[in-house]
Amino acid sequence: MPRAELAIDPVDAAARLLGCTLEATTSEGTVSARIVEVEAYRGLDDPASHSYRGRTARNDVMWGPAGHLYVYFVYGMHFCANVVCLTDGVPGAVLLRAGEITSGVELAQQRRRAARNHHDLARGPARLASALGLVREHNGVDLTDAESSVRLYEAAPVVDERIRSGPRVGVAAAKETPWRFWLPDSRAVSTYRRHEKRPRP
Image (cartoon, rainbow, N blue to C red; front, top):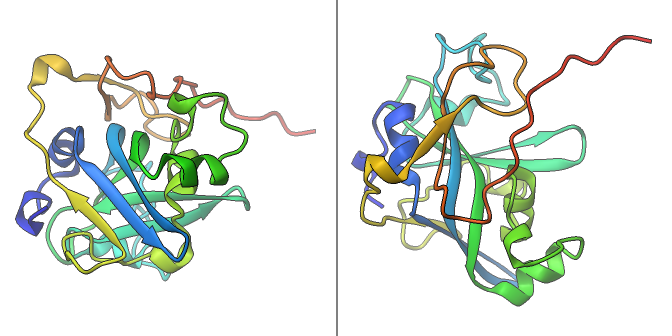
């Protein structure tokens, strides 16, 4: 996918990524997934974004250039993957929430033995990263480079009528902002769960 296609506002990039394919090659083999659910995160004006409070070692990749993979560790047990957007020096990214495994199914099943069926292999951001074998070492990978270990392939833009939107999942701030986008005809789309603050003991 050309870098210029991603050097745009994350909200626009999120819709553009629907239907595109993310392909990852590791020593175990190659797995591909068609992206069916995403979430947009801007930078300094988005309190739900990792870059809201400024640049850090953790979120450095979010600051560009566009077209790179931003991988982070969450809850001390899962990796999640994002596609960096906007221009160099301006933070923004799109979280890849769910995908349909289109090749490398057996390898994805080995990595996701708890999956109940094919549609469950990459339903949710942590499951998607796990099925593709994405880990910390993939942080910063250039998705627009054909020689990269992780590559993003463009698809024809999905018409607006086929896209649904709603609140983002699992965020405490700006949780009503409707920047989650998905393809309603896909069974791999994750179940929406509103963030609830846990009571202190």
